Image 1 (cartoon, rainbow, N blue to C red):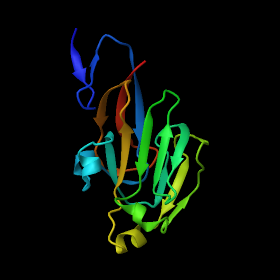
Image 2: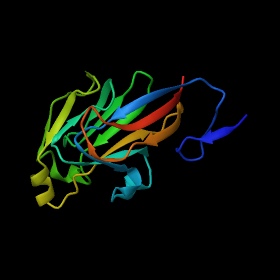
Image 3: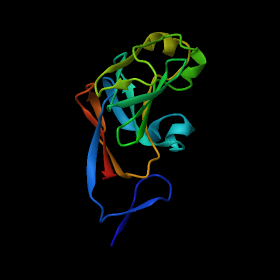
Image 4: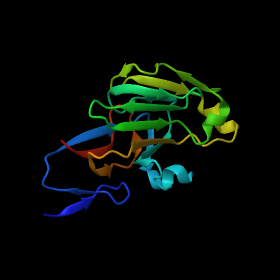
Length: 173
């Protein structure tokens, strides 16, 4: 019986369980990078979870998975989606953009509503945000969850929103 770390601290999963795969697509057009490349310790040090980030070339952000929107930040910069299996995914538009108090963001979804993979969550004004000194990179984080076995990143320089696979998650069924 071999064990494998799932990338979430010291939790270990046994490999004799049935697993399934969940693919997170790119949330916008841009360059998919590893979460370690994000210039913010909360994300790069995986303090809240693992995932990927995207340097956007588009200003529209889409849901990478289907599920219930359990949180929409008042500042419209962060969205938490809980999948039907209970896994939570955070889409965080920009670094420290909470400080903009919603300026430069427009949300298209409401808390506690269901969203489908590929549904538009928000648009943001990349120029406005950059001119105010904020990094527009978008971390997409899989929050710690017992069913996650492993994550596989698909880095690319020219990701297309809703088309390009960004991250493959293996889950225990």
